[in-house]
Picture 1 (cartoon, rainbow, N blue to C red):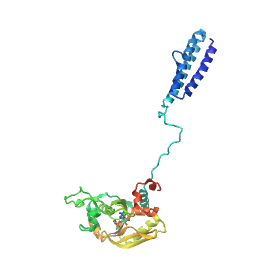
Picture 2: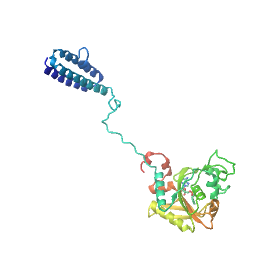
Picture 3: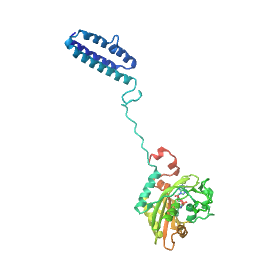
Picture 4: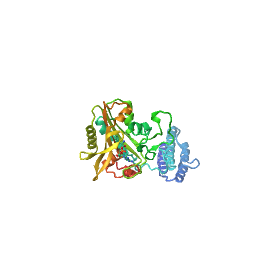
Length: 343
Ligand code: FA5
């Protein structure tokens, strides 16, 4: 056999074997093709190898080289087909994986509307020079009541109106641990913590969770957030309080917001007011405010003859609801994605 014939036989065979392997639709037909082309006993490769003997000695080297190349090419095509049909492709995916299908878009979460509100409120108050302050959610009676001028026998300390912790009792005489600890019922606790640690002037806001055993309804939830504001300096007046709250309200809700103060009572402010905003044809209470009571200044060691100040505490959920037209506070904590994804 001439070298030329040998080479062209191999070319044809390589093409034939490769396409047989590539077109095999399952492992059985691939095995049939393997036996036909690469089989040791009767395969086409074996026949070709036998013919090597009839080639001129001088051409045998070239024929041998081509034969080796043929073997490795055809073996390679076979291995690829085998991997494909066993479902293990080069990406290691299972046979049900179709890399040509369009991918699934990852779901991007939303920042909770209350968290968005907190960020917004901090930004507005920050522009008015208020710094953020924090306090613990598990409080002692000193910070939640006593220093805020709420004495032992005050109804606000009733166990039915507070979440007292069953485990925390102390007879140590340490005023911060008198009686039971509780989940704070108002962020006014932070006023005390700030004033205990800093001399005037003070200008802080504190945004955080508070807890009350209130029955849930459209405007009440047992866990909610408050924004506490405190400003202490010389010559602070009620006019400053009104201005700050008005500027805040117009920034947060828009120029057309209507705001109203109603006379009220809080043990830690004198005089005290209830702050209402007009919403959906009605006045809704958004918080309380007033001039810091001298008894509070005395509890933290400020001289009430020198300093005066105002404080306010607004319900964050109600602010959030007012801005977004949410009519039921329970929607905010339902965990319903259809609701949350709107924000
Ligand atoms: C207070 O908590 C006072 N600490 C506010 C204050 C601070 C007055 C500083 C003076 C000086 P009040 O209990 O009214 O006040 O609550 C304030 C606001 O929290 C309410 O107006 C309301 O917007 C919101 N709030 C009260 N209870 C709930 C509740 N269960 N669910 C949702 N929001 C509530």
